[in-house]
Amino acid sequence: MAEERRKAVLQLLQRPGNARCADCGAPDPDWASYTLGVFICLSCSGIHRNIPHVSKVKSVRLDTWEDVQVEFMASRGNAIARATFESKVPPFYYRPSASDCQLLREQWIRAKYERQEFAHPERQEPYSAGYREGFLWKRGRDNGQFLSRKFVLTEREGALKYFNRSDAKEPKAVMKIEHLNATFQPAKIGHPHGLQVTYLKDNSTRNVFVYHEDGKEMVDWFNALRAARFHYLQVAFPGASDADLVPKLSRNYLQEGYMEKTGPKQTEGFRKRWFTMDDRRLMYFKDPLDAFARGEVFIGSRESGYTVLDGLPPSTQGHHWPHGITIVTPERRFLLACETELEQRAWMEALRKVVDRPMLPQEYAVEAHFKHKP
Image 1 (cartoon, rainbow, N blue to C red):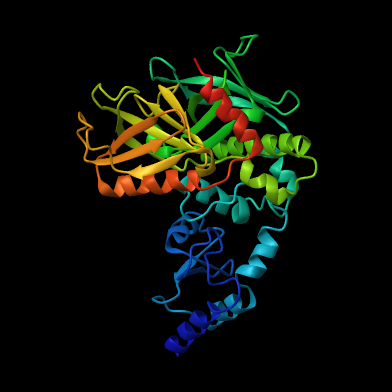
Image 2 (cartoon, rainbow, N blue to C red):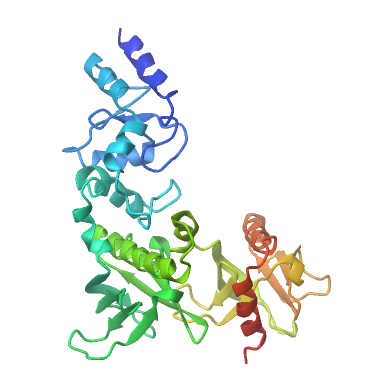
């Protein structure tokens, strides 16, 4: 009898919508919340366990199921649960995938089932009001200490500002929503709620690293920034659909990590640097948490004379790491070296994806600026 019930639950996984985790979209979920009626992956089941007053979980394959639980799962399923718990998700709200950090997935699950924010739009006010202020721990540009700073996001002014003192009249920095990006970087920042905010200052990238002890607070800030970007882009591109705009709200980096590089004359030794591939900007830093890049390289398309080659020219000397990459641009060659073949392959793949992509009209203007940089 127990085996029949387990088989019945397994069969439910064949139904449309049940073959992927209800929360992060991972394939082949083999856990279920028998109080919510959803099929979920192992990773998300751990988050559900932290909200036992809302969700109780069982293994589809290993646990014993009762008739009433099987009937409830049969009457619900991921598609029905989505229609119930995700009926009013704002288009700008970030829906995490299996590869996203724990914080984003946890707050998505809590927002859906525990706080029911997407069934009750009035509960979305913290990130949809167009204005937000509060204190975040911000890393100092020069000393590396995290200090409490007041942040103000105002859609009306199209800016995120922070103040060095809570009573300060003038902000320390004004970050235009137009040029702003935010991405969670818990490992790099050393805090599970660490967020990296970047903006352009004199067309160079400036990094700001922040966190808040309260995970909900940090994710609300992240979605408030996405909302501000969404409303800015709706005005800037009046004919564009939500589907066109949503991918532009925030972006994760294509690739990050240490590589060695040499200078333009390729006569000096190679130095270890932290590299970040942010869309078409390849930036390098002395330290991953530096405020400004030591240098930025524009990576254009193949049609514009950019290529990525495996290895280094035979005459190259001075590199400690064996796995070379040569980036050819119309102006010069950039010689880089990776410590492992695996890292080299990952970088080559990321760079080639960018090179293989045709350039947009506005990207030609960015390329022109890079060419005329002092």
